[in-house]
Length: 168
Length: 274
Image 1 (cartoon, one colour):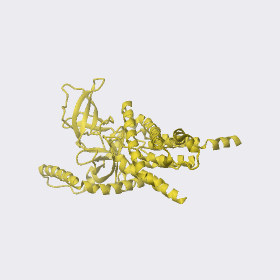
Image 2 (image 1 turned 180 degrees about the vertical axis):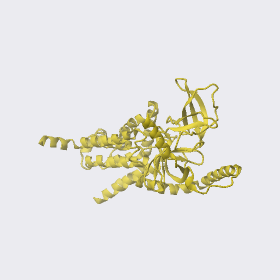
Image 3 (image 1 turned 60 degrees about the vertical axis):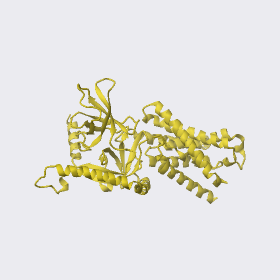
Image 4 (image 1 turned 135 degrees about the vertical axis):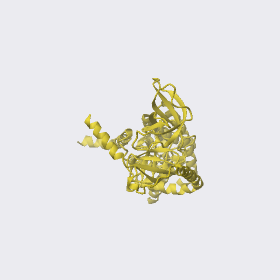
């Protein structure tokens, strides 16, 4: 039981540090930084309390914000992702969710990746939707949503396959 | 009463989400004006120290390059020093100097965001406060926006809120330096009135102007890349290619103008008299 919380804490801190020390400085093609801390919502246990998840997502987003000087954009985006995580899981995994021993790791690849993709879509839409007020034109925002989304997805899939053994 | 409690319990997730979301929106909007400096920034103790550790590790990979930069700067300063008229006495009392310079290390830098901030490892305990200018050996970097005890957060020239007085070298035509958030190598100089013939050519140097009490005059900024007229045709909009490579910053100098309080006081009094 405690093992689970220890892993969760390490994962949380690890994701924040990886995000702010590595992925925020990648600047692929000049300005694209994948937001891999979204993986927290992918790895978070399915049966856990939703209220706790929303609270944790606030802390997660806020810690990333503290490091990135983005005020509370990451906080708002990660809150929204946490809120919509349950409906997305319903949509992707369907009836399987009802089983007590359901695990994301046991579902099909397609389901896993579409779950991740939907999390990224919700997150990036909120993040860049709020950033719209500080960006001069719409085209730039759409470009950033698209390219950042793709890069987050690619790095997300890589990291998921890298750590997939640990969850069993 | 029972119903209200039941309603709250049934919708606690939604309510919590809405509450926290409103808090985050509030924190974001607070950022909108320059003088309402942000409450939370990477100049706090925790992120400052983590970035500091990170920077001290990364620093080793650029030692050669940094030495080269220092050598070039020393060469430039020495050639300046050897060519000034020797005076009988050189003032040794630093208290009477107008500008004071503090060295600092860049612990965090960003250039790909729409609003960029730089974190330096000097803070209020080194008497760094808001509205001090920050430069490197090559040119200007930005203005200190907020400082904690050990770190300070600098509003980079690559920030939509940045507005710095600048002029064309060897003339007195000045305008304001802004950034259109597109290219991190190019900033825009606006509000230079239209004249015939134009007082500048592509390739001319842009330096800081004398109108600011933050930067000393004639600190290099960049060279002119492109000159165009604004929509009304009354003033120029000049694209300036920065001397500084904003993607690769390690060390910076913070400039303190000792006479700034006096200037501000005077300006305030005049404003009050009107």
